[in-house]
Amino acid sequence: MVDCVNLRVEMQAATSKVLLADIGGPTLSLVAGDTLETTVHHEIKELGQHVLACTVSYQLPPGARRPSISATTTAVGSVDTGDDNGLQTFRKFYKFAVRRARPFLSPFASLVRHLYTFDVLFV
Image (cartoon, rainbow, N blue to C red; front, side):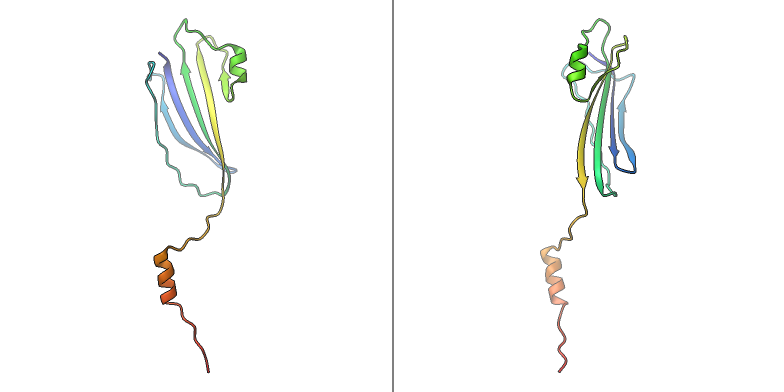
């Protein structure tokens, strides 16, 4: 069992950082096989590089076997706080680029455009 489970999800862009979810806390405990899930929604208004940052922290019970220092430093995104209270944190980053959308005409819009577009010939 782990205690004080917390999940924090943030969207970072060049000029902004938005908190999308912050669930759990000191009263949330999970036993083996339990999951903590959430779905986030965010409208992206800024072009360029974005990072979806997911941070999970939890507290190991007293007497639990803690990861070795070499294990936490070699794991990507893992952070061992080094405290005696057993607080563990790991992060996962999802980096992606947002580009300007291409215009799209549906077949219906294309048909309407064709019907209402005509050439005028002056003689």
